[in-house]
Length: 223
Image (cartoon, rainbow, N blue to C red; front, side, top):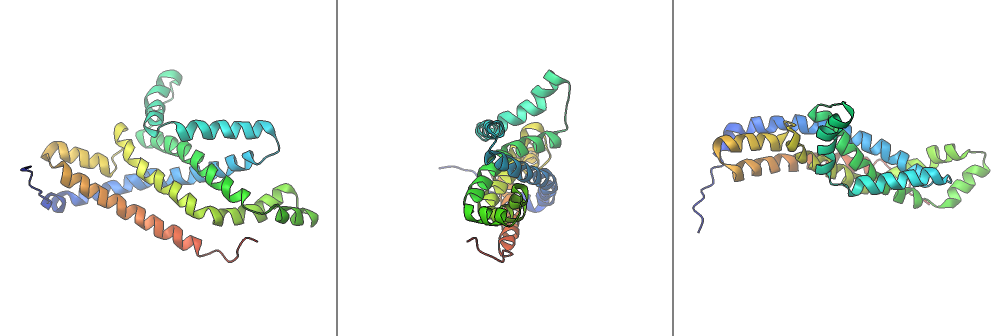
């Protein structure tokens, strides 16, 4: 039997230091969520476009960045790109770029499903009233698709937040990085990583509550 003795008292002493990493996790994940959502909308609109070039470009983007592991993407952006181009980024900026690209590919598929769920009769009716295709997309299709997509989009956002833990590889001082620092000093990995997990669960739970409250703002049901 294992002789390991848990000493969760270390969390009482260093819990505030761990919790401080939530700020770095949030300032990394929030811009990534915003960029991924905006780019995802653009990619989804490209995929439903009648122009073959736009559709092909969007499909290639999605197929590349949703299949490429975030770890590989992060390493290429932070370490390989400076070698090839001479352009370097801070660890946080590299993380935001990597998470945004991966998240955008996932968000695109969520939005595309929501857009395609809107009946064509609505677009046809709007165009008969004089709406242009851009106006139909902006005022009719997109608002309905946005609410229809929220549950799937929430999952994409949660994935982005969880992927922030990968940024420990390039020394973003978020919760997992701080847990690793303390583990090297005190050799209490189980307690410290458990504390880090609890903090991420709290962060994701709070974000989920926020997104569910947004779902309740819908005042109509798609016809």
